[in-house]
Image 1: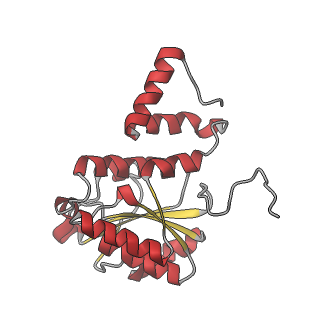
Image 2 (image 1 turned 180 degrees about the vertical axis):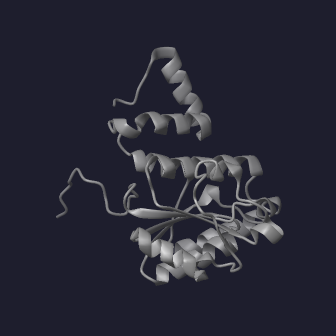
Image 3 (image 1 turned 60 degrees about the vertical axis):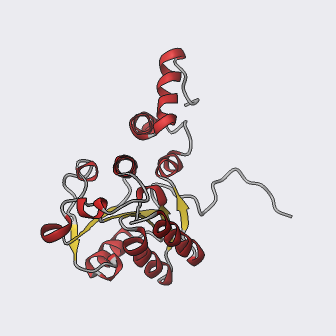
Length: 217
């Protein structure tokens, strides 16, 4: 018989157990993205970037053909990591660029979190490659997008069938916080949720403004 223990399960993400790879959030890639509108996509990418920055998660930023075709990485990401070197590739599969494997190995985390454009190419490729090499892979579905709803959904299904764990951008932030008593990250988590958390952020503004509510920290 199983016995309950007040500890987090090993499949939950924590600030110290994963590397985040943000892939090809670039203008040219976004122009053809139809499964999510550009405003929402940029908002969610910013949320993910700020969450990773706040919790000091190892982050790898990568682009494809930045100078010759696809354009720069979203300012919502680069402004959060102004000193981060963005790896510009020619390969559609990020995982096939040796510079990525060097960075992943240097971080030393067994969990990989992916977000980027397009889901069916630039996320499927590294996801399938990483999981074959023994990594646990998570995909932030609403910080990804593809040329159609069909393309995005089939890519997500393919990855889930192969073992990927899907999540959302707000879920990523809150999973890293996980306990409102963690006062060292509380204020920034709330600020990020207010700025990028949609209706949840509005709820936080309302509760704190109207009756000074807090989450019990």
